Image 1 (cartoon, helix red, strand yellow):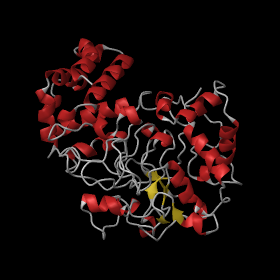
Image 2 (image 1 turned 90 degrees about the vertical axis):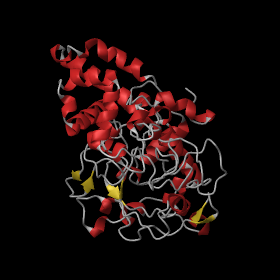
Image 3 (image 1 turned 135 degrees about the horizontal axis):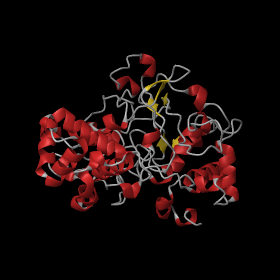
Image 4 (image 1 turned 90 degrees about the horizontal axis):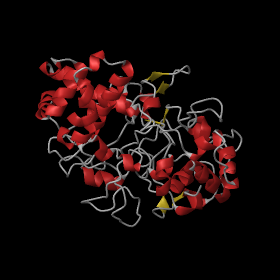
Length: 402
């Protein structure tokens, strides 16, 4: 991505942007956001941009190969240069976080953090909802010491001012004195990035499922069975948490109700060995949110969207599972009888104890019926349907036809 090229269209109208109509100004704001999103100069070592951990080529997730430390987070599978890490490497090329970078595709649909009609916590960005808006989320990584590692907003401001195009664009959009205050300039940067994240580039709603609803795609029998199972309250309980709107045929469904649950995910011990957190560290999920002190929220994480889920491995908040089928089998262990269901197919061992054993959502997890192999295959086929059209070539060949 050439930042000067991205800014070229903006510069043509930036000097008169206040005289332009709202549509022109919005386009200019999004263009500036695009340049910022791909700019590695906004990290301390000039090695990392927003797009590094949220790569548009991979549904806005981090698909960088595992480096030092081997195949952590892949749950025992063979190492491969194409295998994504469970957590992202920082801009210093050596630090690692403790959580998997979630997709920010369709993130514009996530409601602000708060409580719903049932008084359950809902919404917010990051796995624990601590950022209330897209703007707040965008402001976290540049100042995070193990991510982009900028020491303060003033340093970010100085980096912006290094670029004459940025100076011209910021002043055209936000006023001639925008660089006189680091807080205001930083907020303007976040506003621009968030404007980009609200565009169709991030949320196209053009998957096979969307085309099916519009009458432009005919599902296979297996996909139709997956649709039936997913939205069934009798056979599965998937839509209890992974359906936002009441009607299955509703347009612009994001496949998450953005509530918080503890589903008993085990510790990713291999990741902890790499990032230095150690075996005694516990990620308390929602309880890590600064505004939450209710111990009943311990271990809960926000329900993620299922959009593009087939191409955004590894899975769970800590990237402990590599394969989407493994995720389905993990859920199935709460319902299936027999010892085989209690074995993680990626490790050949038991699933492991939950990182936080309290507050597990047993009511939701134990509803429905145990899934046989045919049902799991059908549900996976349905979830493959949720892949944006431009990412369909990333699916296995059998799933990318039509």
